[in-house]
Image (tube, rainbow, N blue to C red):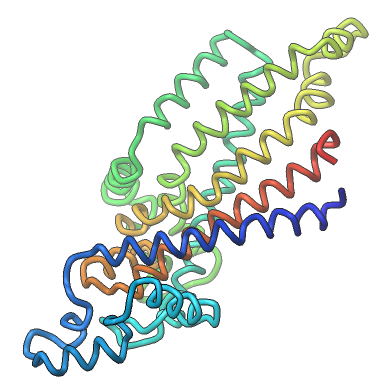
Length: 316
C-alpha cells in the first residue's frame, strides 16, 4: 500500500474519533453547574430576558438537537462567541494555537534529540554504569511533575542566576526576532519535555536491545564489525520505526502538557487561554481549547502512523 493510500485510510479512521471527541466535549460541558444565559446577561437580568436568550441560543431544546446544531456550526468553522471578550472564538483561538504549537515544536525537538541520543548511548552498553545512569535519569524525569519542574527552573535559571527570561515569548519593552523567541522558549520547553524524554528513551532503548540481540547482529560481530558500525548500520536503522511511533505519540501529549507550562511561564498560548476561560466560565472558549488539543492529538497519531509506515518495510 502506498503512503498516500495509507494516510487516506488513517484519516478516514480519525473522522469517527473526532466526532466522538466533539460529543464528549459537548456533553461534559453541559454538566458544568450554572446558567449560560445568566452568565451572559448578568444577575440583574429579568426572567423574561433570560428566557428570550435561552430560546435564541437554543438552550431550551433537547440536548441532541443542541449538539447537532453546535456540530453543524463547528463544521462551518463557527465555535461560537466568547462570553467574556464578545469575539468569535476562532479569532481568539488561532493565534493562541500557533503560540502553543511553537512551544510544542521546541519541546518535541528536545524530546527527540535527547530520547534518541540517550537510548543510543545506553543500549549498546547494557548493564554498564552508563546504561544504569541513563535508566536512573529516566526514572527521575518521569517522576517530575511539569508544574513543579517549571517552578524549580524558573527560580534557579530565571530569578537566582538570571540566565533566561521568566515570562512571555518576547521582551515587552523591545520585542525581538527568532533569537529572542528561542531564548524565552528554553525553560518552558525543557519543563514540558522532561517526562516525554523518559518515555521515548525507555521505549527506544528496549527496542534497540531487542535488535542488538538478533542473530544477524551476532553474525555481524563475527564478521569483525565494530560496535559503532553495528549500532549505526543495524541497530539505529531497525529501531527507527519504533522511535518514530513513540515520538509521534508525544505530539499530542506535549501539546496538552504545555497547558501547565504556559500558566507558569505566562506563555500566551492555548493553556493560558483555557485557564482564563475556566476562571470566567467562558464555555465556548473552553470547548474550542479542548477541541484544539484533541485535534492535535489525533493528527499527531496520524503523522506518527504515516512515518512508521514509511520507515518500516514490513508494514509496506
